[in-house]
Image 1 (cartoon, rainbow, N blue to C red):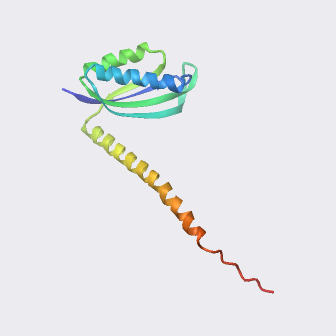
Image 2: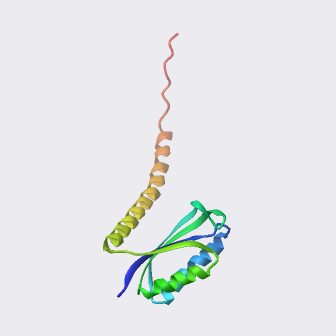
Image 3: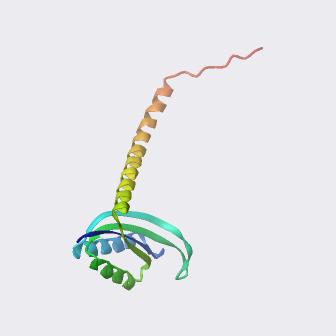
Length: 142
């Protein structure tokens, strides 16, 4: 039976953008090659850690939601342990409420992104309308 999981890993901050993308591609490929299905991915970027881990104060956070058989989680976590680029990781099985919340969160994020994309277009039209209006000069008393 397929279950939905959410895994977050923290990669070392010394990685370049290309190395980080390579690490993410490695784990998404690992999931799909072992019969899983990646539902959602989100790059949280470089963030400060609450406490130093391996003498590092920050790390690249990345979230992957996927559906798979339960035995894939142990294999995935073994891969995390073997990779020196991964500082910490956490994989959680999602219940139906967590799945519904994640879908709602993704929908809200997409709506905000669409609204943000539409807002600059609306702002671009406003200055053009303001240029047609002549400024009102204030009367001065003499």
